[in-house]
Length: 64
Image (cartoon, rainbow, N blue to C red; front, top):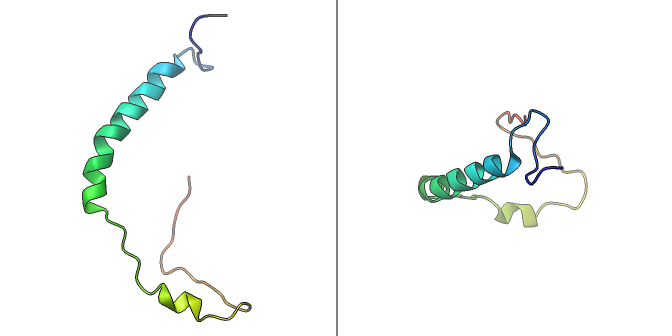
């Protein structure tokens, strides 16, 4: 058993984790600026009945 954990391909996991963390810290501030969350129409949800309500999306979302 080695000092550092490796994935099945023999790459060190800590290097991958730190690269992802550094890239995330660098890009988070940039994308947060122009991808501001805006929610419109949420007050309508309070007035909906408790049953027989269907939410339909107006776009297709892919989850990989």
